[in-house]
Amino acid sequence: ADCSTGHVGALQPSIELKLKSVPDMGYLVTDNPPRGEILISGPSVCHKGYYKMQEKTAQDFPKHEDGQIWFHTADIGVLLETGVLRIIDRKTDLIKLSGGQYVSLGKVEAGLKQVPGIGAVAVFARPDKDHCVCIVSQPERGWASVGGMPE
Image 1 (cartoon, rainbow, N blue to C red):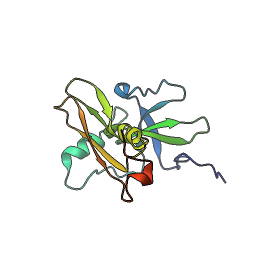
Image 2: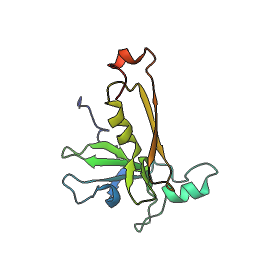
Image 3: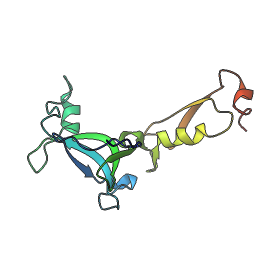
Image 4: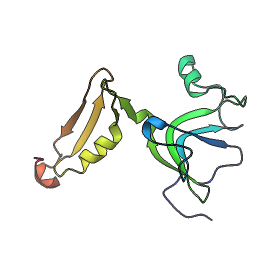
């Protein structure tokens, strides 16, 4: 039995997987190892889409040139040499600001959480603005519990 951690695991026999390059984020299927958006298909994947959400279904469950319907998960994965899949990023976490810069809100939040004194943080942005905004909360047990107030 495979007892390793840090990955999704091996594909089930009823699932087909392919990766789609996401050049804006720097993930390419030509990378070594291959990286890109995770697409899945097969008999165990619902091909009817989302309930009463035709537009979102058309976006996330398109029919490809091979005639199959592929579910675009919006997860970014890397296919490891052992044949297992690791999720490394989220495509929908990326937002393009009005100046053309792409920002990964999750990565900004993760970086801010490393700052001593920050208890919790939420980052958001709008595509019609040129900056992100974050809300930082004081820790429940006071600033001293996390090493003092941030500078």
